[in-house]
Structure formats: structure tokens, C-alpha cells
Image (cartoon, rainbow, N blue to C red; front, side):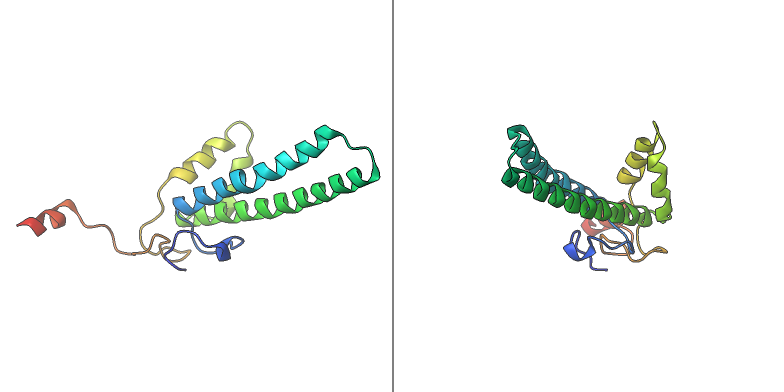
Length: 145
């Protein structure tokens, strides 16, 4: 696993680990750059209410595109959620707890913002690179002695 924080080759990867940066960046990109424009296009054509065959075919094409993009986005978000749990050395199956009514979103916030395990864990190396803990305050202060 490379130490860079985001690559498209890990988009559908359920293995390894994902840092908080990668996790939130993927959610922002999918929501703002992909889902929102497609939804605007679908709403634009829906508001016009085209009843002719050409408009219906165009609406069907947008509906198909919307379905494909939403399905791919769901799989990518599921993958990054599982990798985020792996970063904390938890099973990806715990993601199902986010579907519990009324309290699932709290669980999602907890695992989204909790820092991952430093160094290597059961699911792979630290996605932030390194593998050694940060130096202590005493070690940093000894530089100035």
C-alpha cells in the first residue's frame, strides 16, 4: 500500500486501510463532483416534462447513467468505509451497524473521526506512511540542547 493519501486504483478495494483524509476526500468528491451534477441534470429534464419520444429516450439515458453512477459510488463508499474500519483494526462487517435506525449515524461519526492505529496492524501498513510513532516532546526538546 503506497503512503499517498488518495489514488483511484484503491477506489473499489476492500483490503488494506484508509486514512481519515482519504475517507472524507472520497465522500466529498462523490457527493459534490459526481452526484450533485447528475442529480441537477436529472431534475432539469424532469422539470421540462418532455413527453415526446426523443425526450423520453434522453430521460431514460440519464436514468441509466444515474443508476450506474450511484451503484459505483455506493460500492466505492462501502469500500472506503470498510478500509476506514480496518485502519482502526476493526472488521469491515461493523459497517452494518451504521444501518441501525436512529443511532447508526452516531456509529458512523465515531469510526469516521477516530484516528487509526499507528504503524502496521492486522490489515496492513499505516496509510499515512511511517510506521514509527511520532517523537515525544522530550526528544524534540533535546534537539535544542
